[in-house]
Amino acid sequence: MIITTASAEDTIKLGEKIAKRLKSGDIVALSGELGAGKTTLVKGIAKGLGVKNYRYVNSPSFVLVKEYRGKIPLFHFDIYRLNNLKEIEDIGYEDYLARRGVVVIEWSSKMTRILPKRHLDIALKIKNSNERIISVKGI
Image (tube, rainbow, N blue to C red; front, side, top):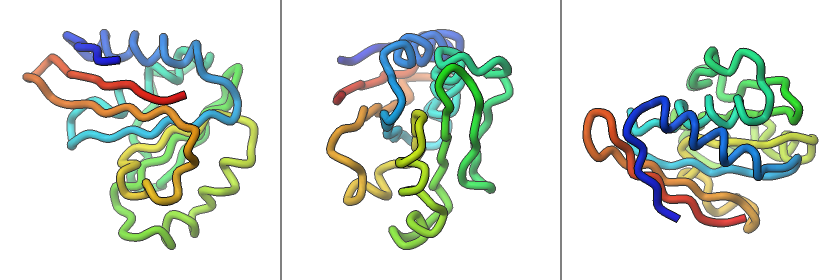
């Protein structure tokens, strides 16, 4: 499915709709260039999962993973700064997969070899300063 969003608010709404279909144990793999709206989409996913302060969701670029409490826990990874699969394993990626929650990974293209086959793949592309073209496939 390919969707075009016209604003950050539209991208948040799309994330919320996606979240309504997610369940504990699901993995969402996000890809797209800097500024494509990955973290904005995660805000919407957080909202849809019942995270009360979803507007405060931000990129965990420096801490690598953030946990949010909602109806279903959200584990938000940003692996932009990691250079290899060993570093991804070292941050406890597999431990989070074993926990009951939804795992969302920004820059997932860095770990395609170790992603479980069953995951939702979302690619975001910048169309212009406001619009994004978002491709959703999987699960």
